Structure formats: structure tokens, C-alpha cells
Amino acid sequence: MSVLTSGDHPDTAPGATANGANAAAVDLGPATALSCRECGERFPLGPIFACTSCFGPLEIAYDFPADGPEALRARIAAGPNNIWRYAPLLPVPADVAEHPNLNPGCTPLVRADRLAAELGITGELHIKDDSGNPTHSFKDRVVANAVEAARAFGFTTLSCSSTGNLAGAVGAAAARAGLRSCVFIPHDLEQGKVVMAAVYGGDLVAIEGTYDDVNRFCSELIGDPIGEGWGFVNVNLRPYYAEGSKTLAYEICEQLGWKLPDQLVIPIASGSQLTKIDKGLKELIQLGLVEDRPYRIFGAQAEGCSPVSRAFKDGHDVVRPVKPDTIAKSLAIGNPADGPYVLDIARRTGGAVEDVNDEQIVAAIRLLARTEGIFAETAGGVTVGVTRKLLAAGVLDPSATTVVLNTGDGLKTLDAVAGTTGPSATIRPNLDSFREAGLA
Ligand SMILES: *Cc1c(COP(=O)(O)O)cnc(C)c1O
Image (cartoon, rainbow, N blue to C red; front, side):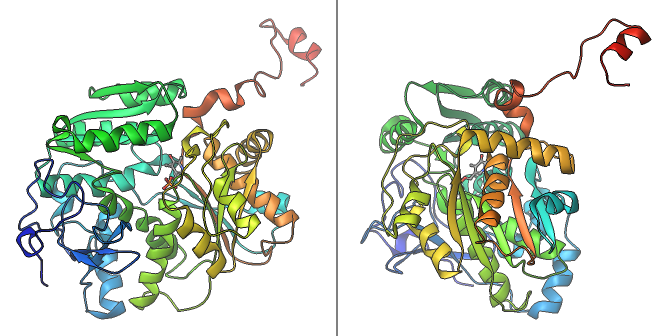
């Protein structure tokens, strides 16, 4: 394995060494370099995220284990019951499981027969339920990977721009790792997310603006001396962070008995998760861990923030930014960085991108809760709602094996459903009163 050092490439990308990180001689396991997704140019592993030649996003390049599928499957099976079982495929050191971290992952893949029956699905329907992660969203997966990069680069402060869930995941992971945290959110988030982002004792800063304003602010902060020594998990650590989403692909296939599902329905905020799930599936095929056969990827957005869905339907390659207005605040990114890649993947795999309105999101949250006992946050309402819509339109195949993601916990977005559900009756504590309520 050859690890390039920063000395090999003096002309590094924005933020390369500017904010005080030590990029020399890092050990991030099988990760060997950063590679530009657009032009393929390679850079040494470091806290950089954009190509200096073409400004394309950087991705991790690997030297994967060459021990063959049987040995690799056995190695994974012998690993811990969390995402670190896939450490041979992630940008983390081999002893990662011994570091203090929140050990997310290995969340249930729930066979959803009752929901399938209501939706008219005759094949297998599964919900990949990520609400049970340590801070109750899928973000713990990506943050856990970013923490390892922060450690490798010598960052002492962990930061992010967040639509809510990420701020909580960063706060908790920093507390556990003994790092300082300072996270940035739009000022109008759900109370559950604000409290959760603050309770771990780091600094939480609410910004008067949208997520896209918060994100712009963070990019400025990185270039300023104030940001020296700061690892922004979704900005200068983004290539490492993003790889965490591959673990969803790995887990889903392992839980299906090392088989690819036929169809996946995935929510889109920046599009990073969807893009990296596709990358994870391709890696499993490349490594021979699953059979090479087609799968289709479907993206799900809220109508009030649906720039990718719009572009898909209009047949465009570029995603026109929008100003978000939806109850699905975790997905409210009006200018999604990975939007064009999502369009590519949906088109290449024979999938689609669709959106649902707030009313349909709430109905889908209640449908999933009623049929499967899973209380999803609004993002889960978006994926289940889009699944329903795509089935009705004949776009999803009802006889195929379908996996729908629930990426967060309904307790964080209570307001979305609070007005639509509640006690069936309020009675005096006696039998007559109960009888009168008509529920006996
Ligand atoms: C962040 C988030 C996503 C997806 O985010 P991407 O930016 O597209 O990777 C999905 N669901 C929830 C609940 C989230 O918090």
C-alpha cells in the first residue's frame, strides 16, 4: 500500500494545510489517496475536498484487501456488531474499534409485510431503520468516519453545517472522543433537534438564514484564521465523512444474505448518502461479495425542497437551487452538492427521483407507524410517501425486493404529526365514562 504524503504534492486544494492540520503520514487503513470525481487527478490524503484543477469533489481511493470474497465475508462476520465490521472497506485505521466512538450501525432491516400489503407490494419489502443509531439518525455513520479523519489530521475542534441531525451527531461524537465541538444550524429547526444538538455540551450556533446560508458561512470560516484546527465533517472532511454512508449498502446486502436488493428508495438532502450507497453497492460487486446484477436506485425529496426531482422530471443535468419550504427540515438543502451525481445514478440504474408534499409525508409517517410499529421522522415519511407514489404510477416494480430507508426518529419531529394524532378520548376514571366514549 502506498500512502502519498503532502510533500509529494505542494499544490494542494483549498484548505489543504491552511487550517493547521497535520496531513503527513496518516494511517486511514485501506484509503490510499483522494481522487477527483470529475478529472481523476489524485491528491494525498488530507483535509481537502475539492480538486485544484477542476474544482470537482474528491473521493477516497482504496487499496482493498485481496483475500477474495469468502475470506472477506468471514472477516466481516467476525467483526464487531457495528459499522467497524466493514473497516477493511472504510477510510479508518485497523484498530478503529478500540477508539472511543459511538459505534453506530447494524441497525435492523425490518421485513415489512403489513406495509407491503397496504401498498400492493407482492415482493419482499424491507425498511432499513436507522432511527436506532446512537443519536437517532443515519448521521452517526458518517460522523464516526469523519472523527477518525479528524483524529488522523490532528484536528481538535469538530464542526459542521447541519439541517439538525448532523449537529446532534457531531456534538455526541465529539463528547465521546474528547474533542471540542462547535456546530452551526439554521435558526428555525425543530426543538427536538436543537435540544439534542446542545445537550452534549459543545457550542451550538443558530444562524439567521437557511441551511444554504449556514453552509456558505462555514466555507468562509474554514478559510479564516478562526477556523484553524477545525475539522468540518461535511466540508473539509467531506470525502471521509461521505464514505460512512457506504455502510448502509454493506449492511443491507449482508442482512439480505449477501444479496443485492432490486430497488432502493433513498432520501436526498445534499445527495451524498444516495451517491455513496451506490458506491458501496458497486464495491460489493467489484469485490465479489454479491452477485453482479442490476439494481435500481430511487431518490426521494419533499415537494417543498425538490430541486433534484425537478431536474430529473425536466430531463436536465444541472440542478437549479431552490429556497426550501417543507416540514422535512432534515432534507431541506436547496442547493444539493451531489445533485448532478444523483441524477446520473437514477438514470443509469433505471430508477427515478420523485417528491411528495407535506400532507403526504405526514400520512406516510402514520402509515409506517400503524403497519410496522416504526415511528419515522419526516425524512422517513418522504421515502415511504415516495414509495407509495412511485408504486401508484407503475414506476416501482411491486414484485421486486425493495428496501426503503428510514433515516431518522419520529421523536425528533413530533410537531409534524402532533396536530394529526392524539388521545382517542379523554374520560373520567370510571367504566361508564369509558363505555360512553364508544371504544369498548
Ligand atoms: C442528512 C440526512 C439525510 C441525507 O442527507 P444527504 O445530505 O443527502 O446525505 C437523510 N435523512 C436524514 C434524516 C438526514 O438527517
